[in-house]
Amino acid sequence: MIGLPTRRHSLVVGVSLLLLAPAVQAQATTAAIDFDALPRRSRIDSTAAKKKDPVVLLREQNAAQRDSIAQLTRALAQAKARVDTVVVTAPAKVDTVVVEPVTVKGPAVAEPARPSTPPAAQVAVSPTTTVSGLLQLLGSGGDLGAQRSTFRLRRAEIKMVSDLGGKTTATLMIDVSKALALSTAGPTPSVTQSTRVIQDAVLSMPIGRVQFEAGQQRLPLGLEGSHSSSILETVERSLMTSDRARGASFGDVRDLGLMAKGKFVAFEYKAGVFNGSGEAMNETDKNSGKAVAAQLIWRPKSIRGFRIGTSGVTSGTASGDKPTRDRAGLDLQYVRGRALLQVEGMAGRDGAIVRHGMYALGTWAFRPTVKGALRFDAWDPNANLESTPASITERDYTLGLTWAPKGTKLRLMTSMPAPSR
Image (cartoon, rainbow, N blue to C red; front, side, top):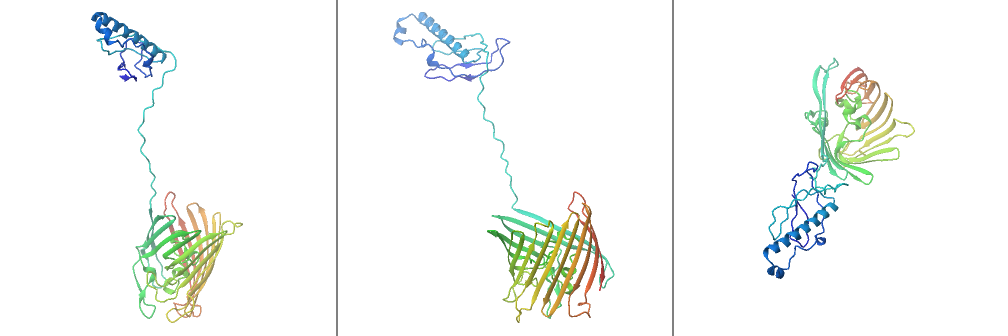
């Protein structure tokens, strides 16, 4: 049932779907009708009606209603509407008035659009905290000194980075494979810094074009030593970084401090002030002096894949409670196609002891998932002494092979070092 609009009249017109002829489809449309244009014979003066016979009055009312229905039918036809049956309610009793169906040719009147239910809103929510990790299982064997065949959990790092807005982040990285150990190399036992569980705890915030990082972090020292172990080309780092038992700390060291980094033209820089150069992590500085570390990298646009860098750290002038602890190094890397060449050298001083280290590394990708590596390593923990196992120069030749199964993030690496002292 569809109601037609009325103005200043109590006439209600309904359109029903009573099919009187097969040609009429079950469809009805609404059209605006101007009832002011219809004859007003249905309105009868009440004074005159009292003087007439009731039967005559009823006939006049029926005649007026028939005229009104005829006008209504013509109006519906002009409005291109289809009417099957019309029932009119008036002051007089009318049972049913049947009007022959009117077929209108021409374009149908479009029905008003029905409001549709809005689709569910889809909101893309970016995670504010991302979690990643590195798990390294190591199996080693050999017959050099106290080295024995063994399996061990080399690294089990969990890294969380929280987006604080405005390109400000908070980073926490722990290595749960660490077992806190003591060192007895000095006059008093001390904690071996490389065995601390908390590795990185940094707040990073940009100010202009400079990114500032505050907290415990890796010092900008060396090429291999300033990058994560997840991108190493061999199982272990070079001797000048990994031989901690003989004073190796020329990279991959952390300390508390404030660092600024950025880029300009073809240069990248990092510079910061720290409690020390890796001798004490997550501890109150034992002296008022501070260590200054810096790194500068040049990537010439004319030589694609080439970079040359220099880095160093100094503790300043030695004092009673602050011994000399300085490092300076130079590194070079060239990547072209399947080949990589990387050379790095560094010299340093710990008090009266002078140390030297270097390595040359070359890799070749046989296939996208298979890469071979060859490295020459040299580490001299004491340039002034060659008479003890703790001071003798070590030279290693390492052959490595890496397989990264397609479709995974796994890397299976094997290294076969051949030490020569």
